[in-house]
Image (cartoon, rainbow, N blue to C red; front, side):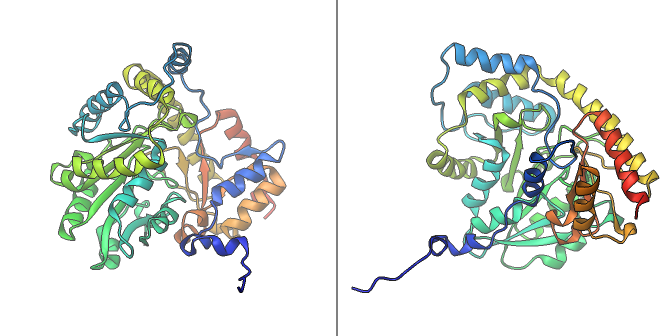
Length: 392
């Protein structure tokens, strides 16, 4: 009998082998090993989860509420989410059959793709974008098709660019507004135009709106608020950003019952249910947490105004984002690439930002800076960036 010699790598699924690791996490690992680094690199709020939310989680443990919940999530949380969607997004979803509680928005996105994609199906998504989108599309055996957005449009997604990339194989339009990494948002005319595009080409829309509560001006315009899109929309949101609950890993999906049921099958077999403790915390956040969101949003707004004005004064062109907690300044005037600028800034001045190319090829020449950190560290980071620019 002949034995074939294989390396461990040979056992890895071919579609997974060439998927890169996250460019954000590469910088995070470097920062974690360094002292005196001011990190503007990780999209995590600097606020502690509000105490009343933590207290409910602690009480649930003390009271022994630590068992499995329904696969879909607790009835109380799903009802609260249904009420929240109606109140905040003008969208009606049945808490029994159209809402699924997930382990963060990342799981929500993963099961949404796996529920609707067949091998070779194309997904239109816009870049710059969150680093997980293209890899997760590939893991679901889909084909990611990037659609560029541009500084001249304030990184809004235009139908004109979408029309250039749509094909008969296109099945899904993926949206993320407010956007990570640019902070761009959509106005009502944008959402209506995107809905018309999806209907014209018979596409399903997956809308990741995890930063929707962090919208500073221009109003919050959700794809969920468009009635004619309802039967072809999967809406994703979660508690990590607006309520500063990243470690709780709690998200949710709203979709028509057949799609929710399909996603629940995957969730049922790979996750079972979201943490019962996190669900208790999420229920408290929805019931009593709105003042916390307002206070944190106002603090982010002050930081946003400061960092945008400061970067522009330093000569790094930076448009005013209307949502999330990121700015996306151009470093093209320095003559350095995004990666060169970020590495030198980190190594020489101990400020961590993420190269724009981590979010797609059209992010070349830009830098993502998160202002989800205190105003004093932000001021020090700006001082260091200024010192660095004066050496160039």
